[in-house]
Structures are given as C-alpha cells and as structure tokens.
Length: 363
Image (cartoon, rainbow, N blue to C red; front, side):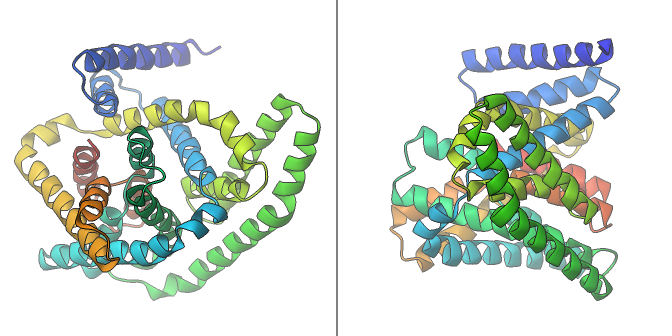
C-alpha cells in the first residue's frame, strides 16, 4: 500500500478530529470547523493532487446522494412551490446580480454567469437544518424544499448551456453542440431510467446479496459519471443524474438506506477540500471587501426569496424563514464556477474571491 496515501489520510483525519473537538467544546458549527481544517492543512501540505482527487470523489458522491433524495412523488406534492417559487427565486436573484455586476463593468456573459453562480443555494446544508429543526412537514419546509428541487434541476440546464457564455461574449456557435449534449443526456436518462437500471436493481435485489447490490449502485453512480463526462458534461452533474435515475425506481429507499451513512463523510471531505482551496493571505489582505460582498449577496438572496414568498402569498413568518434558509451560496455553485474558469468566463482571481465569499455565506 502507498504509505504516502496512508500518511495523507491520517493527517487529514486527525486534524479534522482535533478541530471538531475544539469546535464542539466551544459549541460552534462543525461545518466552519471543516472549512478551518482545510485552511490549516493548506499550510502544511504541499502536494495537492491527492487531496484534490479525494475531494472530487467526495463531491461526486455528495451530489449522487442529493439526486437520490429527489423523487417524482416528492416533486408532485410540492410542484406549485417548486415551479412558481423556484422560477421566481432563481430569476429574481440572477437578474439582480447580473444587473449589478454589469453596471460594475463586467461583460454581459460574465454578469449573467455571476447571477447563475449566486442564485443556487446549498441543498445539503439547508436540508440538514430543516431536518434538525423538524420543519420537514411544515409549510416552511415544503416551500424551501420545492425551491431547492427546482434549483437542482435548473443547474443541469445552466451547466449544459455554460459553453454559450464562454469567451469574451455570448457564443451562439456552440449551440448545436450544446443541443447534441442535451439530446445525448436525455437518451442516457431515458434508457437507464426506464429500462436498464430498474431491471439491473431488481435482479441484484432478488439475490438478497447486500455486497452485490452495493457494488451495482457504485457502478451506476461512477458509470453514469463516466458516460456524461464523455459527452462533455461535468462528472459532478453525471453523479447527480445517476442519483435522479435511481430515485425514481422502487429501490430508491433501499439504496438511500445503504448510502446515507456515508453522507456525512462525503460532506466533510467536500467542506475540507473547499477550505483547502482558500488562499488565507488573499483573504486577510481583502477581508473588508470580501465580508462586504458576502453581506451584499446574503441581502440580495434574502430580498429575492422574500419577494418570491410574497408572490406566493405566504405569511410574513414563513417568508422570512425561507428567505434566511436560502440566503447562502450552494455546493452546485462550486461545480459551476470550475466550469466557468475552464470556459474563460471568470478569472482565477475572481474564482478565489467567489470561493471565500461562498464560505462566509454558508457559515
């Protein structure tokens, strides 16, 4: 076994344990402790390749679980909030951010892309808060879940059409390829969701062999990720789609029961990896403007969701609650931001700034 890998994982785990023990004593949120763990590790670990590979795997499984928790049945029960609320919240946030960034001198494509980056909230974090506070079956929880589900679906379209925003202006020439990618994605989802996956899961379940079932689930997740990557679609989106496909089979609850115990591990790796990317010297040098921008983004998202709540004729109490719950930047935005760099829509410096601001809003 590679001793360097054992050493790396040991250092990551013991650092996380020590930091979280301290945070637990101080009654501070574990998530901030995980970010801090990544920042601390960044000072001592010079080889980032391995930790990046591990963190990317963590993101893939995290988004797979988010997709797995989605279902047509759940969507149908809150479709009013998901469709109307989701559309309004995403559009209002995107428009406000795009207008502000365009006025500040950003090109139109970058301004629109920044709107997309900021409009998405963290499904993983918000759902954890909703479950912890027993809001699952309340109107507040249902409206919030509806908007989050719409965001999760909307991010698929945004990722697919990101190439159109590449370069110095909106590039229509990439539209045919994008539409082919969309068609290929639809074929994969329909073929796997209607025929291949349900049959394969049924056969695996009939053996009553837990190991066989688990290995098949992992293959579906990683295999779909590989297939979508070959279409030029991000692997993280592929993992989310794999979760969506399984979520609408009769084996979704069984799969979730097997995978869910690992959810906190995947989330921890994800947050540690985000902290690892933070340039602490850059943060300290620009702390005033970063904190100010974070507060501005929280205010914009609060206002956008508040207006959405009023349009849905929700009570003031419910509207304020969902506005607070959805006021942070989500994990999908990190995936989208990486795509933005690869297409030249945002710079590396802007990505660093965005990353730091996102951590503050999530915290």
